[in-house]
Amino acid sequence: MRILVVEDDAEAATAMVRGLTEAGHEPTHAVDGAFGLLEAQKGGYDVYVVDRMMPRLDGIGMVETLRKDGDQTPVLFLSALGEVEERGRG
Image (cartoon, rainbow, N blue to C red; front, side):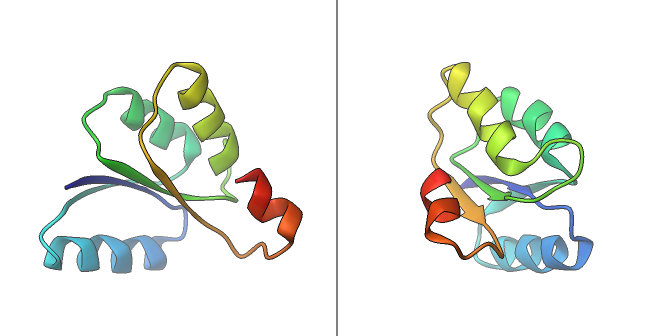
């Protein structure tokens, strides 16, 4: 499975990429939402794992842009935000 990991925390991203690789997946890491958007627009991913809060372009903005362009790739949001409103927004 090709997985795009969009995460600005280097330690968290390294752990995710390592675990996904060990599980037999093909992860690609993007360091923020802007780079994630560019990478996602290339196509070919089975799922996006996206942090909510990132510099330049947050995860919600990235996915909203992709959805407007017709990209329906499933998304798993990572977030430290726990409010019901924030979870619903994702």
